[in-house]
Image 1 (tube, rainbow over the protein chains, first blue to last red):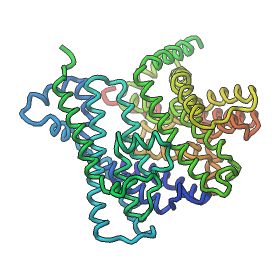
Image 2 (image 1 turned 60 degrees about the vertical axis):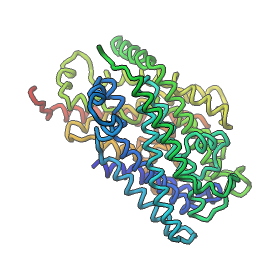
Image 3 (image 1 turned 120 degrees about the vertical axis):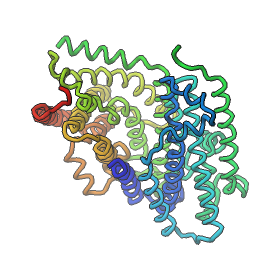
Image 4 (image 1 turned 120 degrees about the horizontal axis):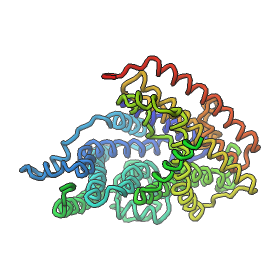
Length: 240
Length: 265
């Protein structure tokens, strides 16, 4: 029922997007099919990352209840334990829908699909899942110090996934900078798509920009990993 | 009446308490506002004349204004994630609630109005200011329109509350409310004008939306603000729906109460 519900919500949004393209010519030079492809790509990454990090998202609750101490005294990585603390299938609907849009996009866009492209797409999707999982981990890390303001991270998790669904060059320079060089969502969705869809880069980054996706994730995960380790070291339990 | 005013006041103060969460929320609303506004700017840019023309009677600046009004209204009308009554029903606490010497519907309505007033001040105003600074957001043409807009927001909150209250009552009959929640969210997103002006939707959807109460929550305040509808017509539309929804909500509540069975109760 919940999967069906999620499907309805996203389906409604796609209907609105479709309606907009009936009235407007294009979106920053991108056709509806190309934007659908981008939507699909971003949704698949986000849902995969969200599923991986599902347990990690319970860390704020664990800390508040004092249950995080139990995790720490066990002889196993605290991260892996948090990760498997809760496993949920709630994002299978979103994932299925993302795959559907991705497929529709792939079939309808005017670009040729080659083996290297398809192989790289697998790499990009895995990297993207890693990036979103890391973003959800940032939320968990912040919850070691504050419980009130972690909603701000939503701007980067949900916001990042939404932003990844549109061609990056339509956004303001400051916004582009943040979502490329601070939180590299743009390198996971937009830039690889330029390569997949044979589109020119209006932003003028070097020619290898579409191929930095796995490295961007690697770097970002490295930083987040350090943050997690730091948080664990400085953790003080709640209660007495 | 004093009791309900007091309830609203308490709820107002309770909402003001969470400072950190408020700042974080404004940040999130701001980011989403910037994103949506940028998408519409790019869409208008694709038109002949570089976005100076109107689309379905909506100019670029009017559409941008709608985006920011919607982001600012988001928390005030609180369309998502309010399941207090459902939880009340599921936990069985509703039995003791119903015994208390106040009207259950009015109790929640006054609390919600207090909450909405606080949210409009601490979430709505700052979010709208972000939009005013960063984008060409239009201002209402006259003071009268602005005041009417404020009244329209209060009515929108009431319509929103009635809708939420009714969806919550589904808890009398179903155990898992999340499916219903999703369908409600989808309906709201499209049929209220939250994602895009209703004029941008295909004819059949538009006709459906105009016949349903959802548009009274989002579209009507926008139209009143932008001067796209006579004030009396906008506010009248909302008032009619409030009357209809209050009657239905109370009826459904009565039916639910009568067949309520609580474990251990």
